[in-house]
Image 1 (cartoon, rainbow over the protein chains, first blue to last red):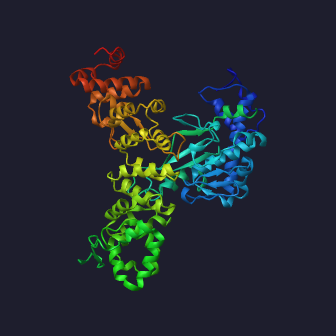
Image 2: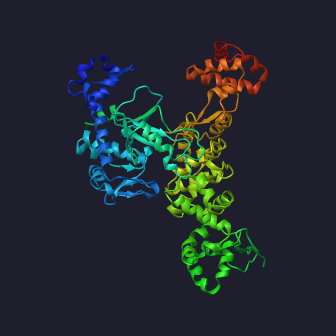
Image 3: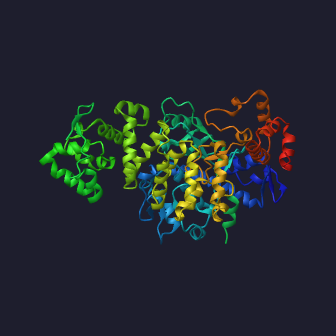
Length: 250
Length: 336
């Protein structure tokens, strides 16, 4: 159920601007059909979340079509015109480089970039945010980008893991866990993915696959005699959409 | 001088007692890796047998073998090494070959004494951790195989030191932290907590991150309440369960959590065996009801139960048989 400023609002009023096959429509539909109450301060706040979720999916697909490759942190690579590669294998935005330029370069010169799946998710988010913030505002806000893992994502983005939830939405980051991974290949201990809203998931290095296909792939990297299959966790990692909406204007 | 043959037929001798002999390890440690390689190249034509003796010496450190590996290949000497060294080179090859993904098969196919060689690599090689990415990757994998495959807990305290040393230098720590937590050992938490008292800010930051599941950890660290952190860990470590969450998965992983059910029944938590199976029928029913309680009631009852068990087991035996509602009443009033 969706309420706008504590008033329940009909699905028709909320989806009239979106075609039924759109991601935004699906997002609003799931929220509206849910037994949970989702409250937004305004319709625009809800539309911002739906649009940003759509941008997350678009960014995932674009990254998947690029030459952005999978490499373990120790072997990670980046365009050093814009990024400094740190001792732990992350990419730190260089001084005097515009954040919008450096982030866009990951798609423009994608073959120069290679890293693990957690960083890829962070890249997806920064790429998606390019679509919802003006260039000026983006460059004001995200001046200290460090592409590494979840720890280093800009705090204003407000990333949070939601455990044991019932509603899963297109644009959610979902984690496939592989508890019996072979110790030789810890990079296969799990896969961060973006829910593309059509029964498939984008995972960096794996491409776009169904949940069953991802589980099958992870299971191939278990140790011999393993007895636990890889599985999709009942949790989702999400941006703080409401806070980000509040940041769109000064 | 004692000459001997190992089971591969390779000649070796123990020269560690020859104090006037400058060992390969000493050359590396005192003069550096490049000087060691030069020394090795120069002496190959003069006395290659002596070099082989030195390499096969039981006191050799892994880092020396690692540094000399290109020279050994260049001079075609690998077949003249003893089993330990041959195994170590095969382990390096296994780790660096991305197509090999099956530990059990790889160790079976390519090594003759895998565990003792892995231990030798770790014991004599960990001090050089941080030299470069390739070397550190080998140490990461050796640790994960020893911990996850061989269930070796003797290395855990050293692994903790390696993690904090790397963290101070800004080096990659994820795989080592992963290997450490895969031990599912709760004693490591006490060791990690010691870094809360460190003078180094990076140590404290990392220790806080790794122990983030302890209630109010930020505040306790801020107020230098190390003793309280330690007390909490000692009280709860028998009931802590391993969740398998890591930094790869989320920004705020909770790798361990207290099993309120185990604490309530004052029964050690065991990752491999369900609590349910350790209880009689009556207690199984109580467990089912307990599991449906709100978290705050679970916390209340488990804390009270633990304290009562420690102070007066006969009273605890009576209390645990009461209906849950009465247990809650007694715990709230603290009247037993």
